[in-house]
Amino acid sequence: MSRGGARILLGRLAPLLGLVILCVVLALTSPHFLTADNLVNVLRQSSVNALLALGQLVVIITAGIDLSIGSILGVSSVVLAMQLRAGVPPLAAVTGTLVLGALVGLLNGLLLTRLKLPHPFISTLGTMNVARGAAMILAAGVPISGLPDGFRMPFNGDLFGIPAAVIVVAIAGLLVHLLLERTVYGRDLFAIGGNREAARLAGVPVSSRLELAYLVSGLMAAVSSLVLAARMNSGFPLAGTGAELDAIAAVIIGGASFFGGVGTVGGTLIGALFIGLLRNGLNLLDVSAYWQMIVIGVVIVAAVVIDVLRARQGD
Amino acid sequence: MKRTIGVAALALAIAVPGCNRAPEKKGIALVTKAMDSEFWLVLADGAKTAAAEHPDYELVISSPDREINVDQQVSILENQIRRGVKALIVDPAGTAQVNSTLEQAVARGIPVVLIDTDAPFAKKSSYIGTDNAKGGSLAATGMVAAIGTSGDVVLISGVPGNESQDARAKGFLDEIAKTPGIKVVAQQPGNSERQLGLTVMENLLTAHPNIKGVFATNDQMALGAMEAVEARKLRGKIAIIGFDATKEAANAIVEGKMTGSVAQSPREMGRQGVLAAIALAEGRTVPKLVDTGTEYVDAKNAAKYAK
Image 1 (cartoon, rainbow over the protein chains, first blue to last red):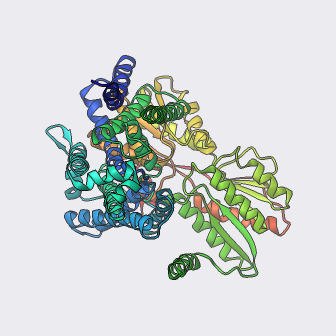
Image 2 (spheres, rainbow over the protein chains, first blue to last red):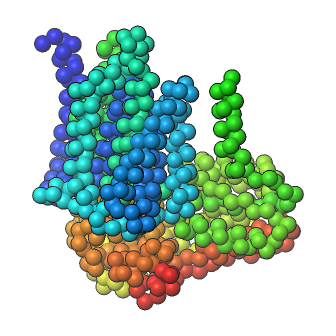
Image 3 (cartoon, rainbow over the protein chains, first blue to last red):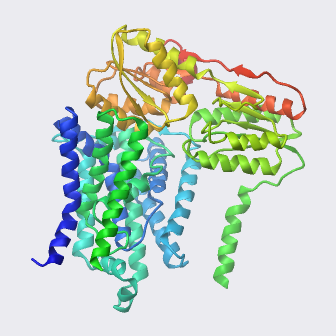
């Protein structure tokens, strides 16, 4: 194997290695960590972030960023809860919520490609605030609670001991993986992230592909709202505040590059699990609030440092 | 060009409904920590009711998006000071961080009334709010009544460094320490958010499976913790006590899903805050300290808060 090949392999394995090290440390320090019950618990807790991160991954691969997903999660959860409370059948309410998420995502894409806003940071920052405001207005600032079992069961129940939320993540992960690795759309997204100008010259329809990427991101945020609302038995306008940052952290910890063109579904899911395990471990060990902030901050910076070093070696 | 005009028109269409024409009235500003729960809405409602009785004053109510955005609250305060309001009613999101801004206000002759959260700000004209430490001790007494004089309990607290949340936690810990059989085995932050209340409670139930009770320093976190207890089918086995006695929490108490909560009077804070601000703006003096009262809410009296 060439040195380059070894380096790529190491880059791919780094997130998994980090996860294993974290698990060993937690297993040694807390007697409650390595139990089936707790591990299933962590999977369930990581599911919302995992779904958001899958959408974020698609966007980050194009060298973009989507800051609006936490707010899309919030507004979707509110619209979902309002429909369910108004007696709309669960299937219709879920469909309506997914369409809403996809439309807001598409709007992000259109702002970027049609209005030619200079960077997705701007367009999605705008949408982030608008969507959060809309959620607060629709819900009049308070949570909407008491959702019907017909909705909650498929997203919050268990199937052979596996939480439904985890199954949702597995299905979504598989679909995103197929999109990225097995379709011409996915190849185009990597090409755009690798070198946008070259992709354009090679005939890639850059605008419509970017619109697709942001649509997927918005859609995944709406999917995450289904899981969260079922778990919390409510839709609430503040849901997902700051969640975009956890999702970005998961994608980066998972080995994707902020510079675009690099990223895998497997890595991203490991990244989401890493953050979930970290928070779980900090709770189990009763680490003080202040130290929790420091630990999480250090891990995020460390992951980005690794990304930067990797990119530099690649030059 | 056409596109530019289109964008400009769009921006105007968004901006215009959001800005009110400023009439020639004396302005007073109420700045809360957030506007994302029933507590703030009731407080704002109390303030509006009081302001409506004084038509020559215009009340502006604003807040940061989240309690944790202290810097945003500082900016709002600076804006209100520059606007030249006659008095400020402030619920400080971070008691240390807002101090220098409040100093500026007083230096410009704008009196400051603190509500809900007290701050070590010497030049405040008045503090109107709950004795949070007393509320915390009421929760501890409720805990003892619910689980007896022995057992492990956990505490889910607010944003670290938030004075009123910290005071509740301290009041609870001080009172519970008088019952040596009860041990607080963990204290973890839930940042006053429901989602974190759920996650933290799940993790605490894993680390301490034998706990008999949880005190969360607000109802949002208590309702999150409640979902964790419900999911594990432990209803009735773990006492859940929150703070605020919001409608939702009171309903949960009536249904037996939650054990208790501590009621404050946000409406009184809003109402008396505005009345004090107007009195100060007109040169009158006001009492330095007003306790708007606390009441422990459990199954016996939850109905009146549940509606």
